[in-house]
Amino acid sequence: GENVEQHPSTLSVQEGDSAVIKCTYSDSASNYFPWYKQELGKGPQLIIDIRSNVGEKKDQRIAVTLNKTAKHFSLHITETQPEDSAVYFCAASPETSGYALNFGKGTSLLVTP
Amino acid sequence: GAVVSQHPSWVICKSGTSVKIECRSLDFQATTMFWYRQFPKQSLMLMATSNEGSKATYEQGVEKDKFLINHASLTLSTLTVTSAHPEDSSFYICSASRGVSNEQFFGPGTRLTVL
Image (tube, rainbow over the protein chains, first blue to last red):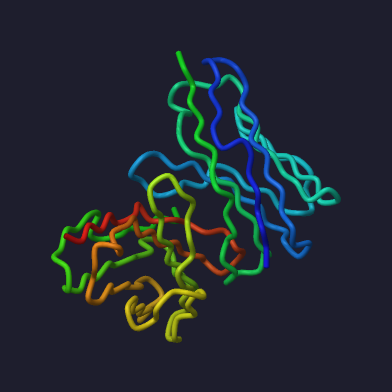
């Protein structure tokens, strides 16, 4: 089955700096890679996703890059703000509907003012 | 669009009782719904996958007689924790897929505390 590894487990940055979270996956059949933000006591919220036919995708301060050959993908947050503080999860799965997502273990991001 | 709700948001029950958690897709039809359990400071662990009108598929190690899942319509799935015990205390989260792709939308979660 799919194994998703996520690093680092904790990340502390100063407001305005960039944050990068990296994930690797093992199953070459995976072609859908979402990123979720989870605040304390809440469900995960999809913030950006990428599919295997795209190498990079950007949405304002958030970007995701994908290297299918190396089986890794990364989340980049620029100009971080204190409200970006949360736990971030990467996931991987086949794009076909009905498949469960395989999650990484999460990264706790703290943005200090 | 693509909003998923859960009810209740939290519940406290006595050991031995059963608890039902509802998961609804509010503005779309969910061909598949997933149930996850999350312990403090851990990742989401998939419990089961359910398709409307079919029996749920449970992950290894998840007791299907203890965690009853019903997906009676394209907008509603329920998880019933039967004969709950303190070790069942956890954060239960559902997600729903629209069927166009594997994009999944998560509910806000239900905090279950069993005394």
